Length: 261
Image (cartoon, rainbow, N blue to C red):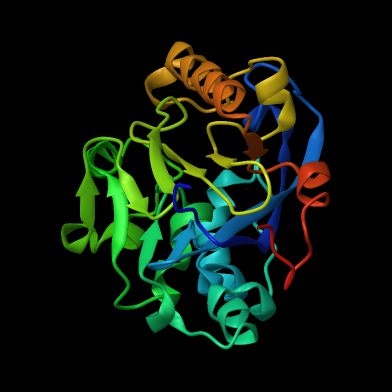
């Protein structure tokens, strides 16, 4: 039998209230939803991976920083809500771990609600697609905060799909952003899991094949192609698709410190 990952812990790193059109392109104007901001800790036989790391808590807790970074977004977004217990080190501590026990931080993309928490994980090896870093350098994506990608020259940039660790493979799913990546995870007991990342915020993105509201350079065709590819892989591998900002779906997962194996 092929080797597999061991377990996944879904981590709620905060919440975000916004106009639904942010998640479903051209759908949901005037309708506001509250979405989970998620990260995932994945344990494998040869190390631990964090898929995404949530927001930079300092930008939320400090009123001056909160206004500076999130004030300009308030037409569509409320500032994220997050408390100390939702920081990645807090979750690690409850499992008897620390940042030094994380072998790879794998960033699906560089938006603030996925990459901001890197400041809480000094010294960790960071993987991200090279196209993400190139796009960030253009400063055309308002969802990327410049200070959060300042150390990109030290990261391990990827240019293709690859095996991240035993039972965990990277899938290139561009569209929402230039270099977005999802993860395919084989588990010992249940069906394989595909962490869609923001290739699919909501179950609706998958069932109705609706692009995310924001697409890099407005290329919604590329985003829909990625959704269809994820669905095809899921069908071929009998895998579950996990949307990334869907509270109904998140509430169906094991509550921390529970896990999926």
